[in-house]
Amino acid sequence: MSEVRLMRKYCNRWLLLLIAVALAGVLVAGCGEEGAPETTQATEPATETTAAPTETTAAPTKTTAAPTETTATGEVITLRYADQNPETGWEGSKAALPWVEQIEQATGGRVEIQPFMAETLFKGSDTWESLKAGLADFGWCFHGYWAGMTPLADVITLPFMPIESAEQASTVLWQLYEEFPVIQDEFKDLHVVTAWTSSGYYPLTVNKKVESFEDLKGLKIRATGGPPTDVMKAMGATPVSMGMPDTYQALQTGVIDGILQNWEAMYSFRHYEVCKYITMVPIHVVYFTQSFNKASWDKLPADIQEAITSVGGLEGAKFWGRNMFDTAAEAVDKILQEQGKSVEHVTIPAEEVEQARQQFGEPLWEAWVTKMESEGHPEARDILNRALELLSE
Image 1 (tube, rainbow, N blue to C red):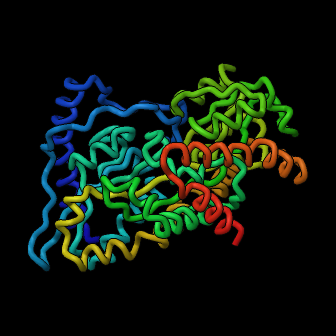
Image 2 (image 1 turned 30 degrees about the vertical axis):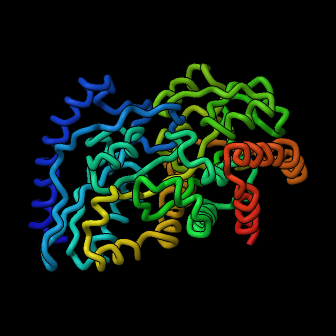
């Protein structure tokens, strides 16, 4: 990207940002939401693996942000991209901005992306409704925020699924999305370009070494809602729900004894500064999408849609799973070496992990199927079986 174009791009961003700030003031006055993102104890800007609120605010009814430019063929189309994470954080620098650049390259420069990072258009928890309202053209969506909205896709989050990496699980999630129209229907309010998962969430503890699942009994463990909370209860731990920005201090002061954590969040929130042990058993994953406002997508010329799709879908799922999560494991090792710190890796015998899967994982799989079927989703059993089949390949 030329320097002239880069300057024009960021000048446009600041102009749109001023408009968005004015809009945010209206929304704050209207629905009482906080206007600024929360901060974290970490000095590195944090990315999204926060606990899921059970409710979201009402969708804005007016859109005053700059309209999408869908000009004649050959002229530049400007699209607004929203992401709750900062561009200097791991997700922003290693995944979001490189992927945005891929879109621009795939379209031969006919599309220019205006990225609005760090909740500068709206809060991360409001992303789905804000995209529906057209406050951005597309954006980064963490589906842990919207409990019950996409319950069939939640199959990938069930505890003790045989997941080896974020790239693997992301591949499976996208295949499930493509194979089951009933899953696609859960996302019908927006146009999904790609979907991916996190890497596994591992027990990370401050003082107590978890060498057996019995060691979790009585510990206060921060966990996201749904199956992760259920499995902590089943294991005798006390699950605690709190926003990720609050967890550093909570770990530091003993409010919680540990946290279920993935590599990217461990790096971004610097939990390695206050936790001594990580037990190398992935309990569960969470998932995300890159989704477009439907009207914005439909306005795009067919060849532009095709170009964007070429860096989405399965390839996009692999890219996001790998770049946002899997590569963060090496980053944690590197920063520990640079800072002269250490987090002891604790292993649990394979036979005990298998026993835990049978005792705690599979009953929750069955409970999920029963719940989905009772809610009118007879496909639930097939979806679970297909997920397990794909993960075993």
